[in-house]
Length: 138
Image (cartoon, rainbow, N blue to C red; front, side):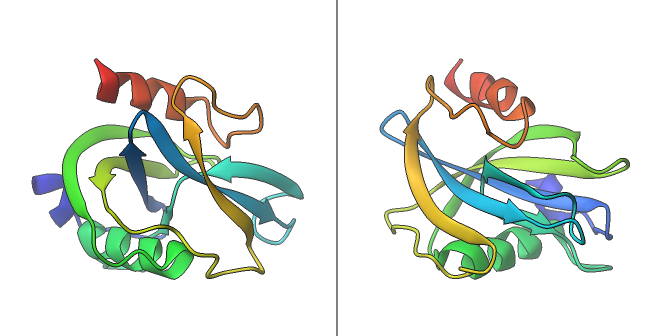
């Protein structure tokens, strides 16, 4: 999948959509004003690329850092959307794993939880997540 080979920069982000039995994995992330703004939102595993990092490696690194999930497969590239900060591009990948998420960064997240695809929490980080999920379930 050519999208996994993209070279990223500080504006390039990955997002892993782990979907299992009609549910998606989301983590409750607590942002602070030095990172974005003071807000708590549900989000998917993923994050920013280091300068020159390949997007596929970023997806693996960020997923492991945030959830402890190391064994997963990338099934499909779902597309991209504009991130929360101006100029950010979030690349979304449908992923599968049989592992469960663990709380790896308690300073950033308070929990990981599976949500029914049709019942995402109101404080989900981006309305684009619903659009991307629709691409997946069509």
